[in-house]
Image (tube, rainbow, N blue to C red):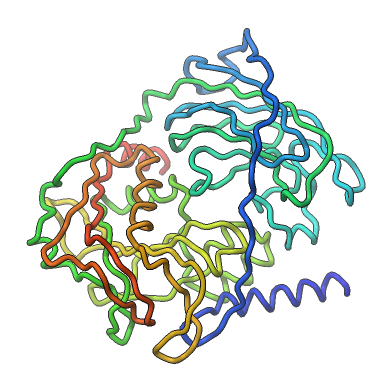
Length: 407
């Protein structure tokens, strides 16, 4: 079968998947998360030039690593804080059995087969040097290539990797050097303060907030399980910094642009989520966090609405977060719909963990409203349970400063 035929079949399947709704079945795909093994660590280099990073502060540490071609991830043991600048350089080569030549740290030029390969970072070629900062279960990989200078957006341990599948590894190795510089004091980040209460967040507030979102016919759906205090730019900044991707609204535009362009992870993440309602209108924003390919069946996602009132003069965002874990029958029309993890507190905690890692949350609390919602059924018939607590996060001035600096 020729390449055009392959692509046509693939796009057709993907197009059907993107229309997954209570009335339209979809085909679930699956893919395992890439694993990682630590390589041999070389002795730290000495005498590095602190001026190597253009805007970095004082050199904190430098280490070198060998990335072996048969491995995917290497844990460096380097702990980073938000705002610290890192400079990573790589050299060496790999060779894949089906490749016509060796490739360097920038990876192979993307070809047709890359459209269907499952790579840790689908925006880069196979064999490229990549990295991630933080918990492997929640963070997004990024491209390093032969050289990468960047400011750590979140706290966490740095891992280095090769953009390949465990079942399709190369031979050879890369030598990678990492330099870490002190954070720029002009871009402060904060460690969220755990508090018992946040002024203005009380039972009188929750009398104005519906406990559940619903579909267009008024059927009750997911539970409202988190609130964010901060303006719109701050809200967008904290989600994007934490690696969440804004979900597109147009189905056809998303599928055709996303699949034909590059088959990137972001293209999968932005597959539309259905419209649900709160305060009499559809969500203002949808955000998603997931691995490529499996996003149709498995996706961390949330919907968020701007409240029609403020809290002590601050803009309030009301959200509902759930974790898609597969498919189930829709009781409304016997179609196929997403099945959510019934323990929705896990997704609430996932949102907390990802957003707090950015350094843009000043205060965090959990509030238990009167007559808390602890067990219910969604509009599609799926059940869920909770301890009834609602996560409350107040965004920091650092998020506002960072947002203003990016305008």
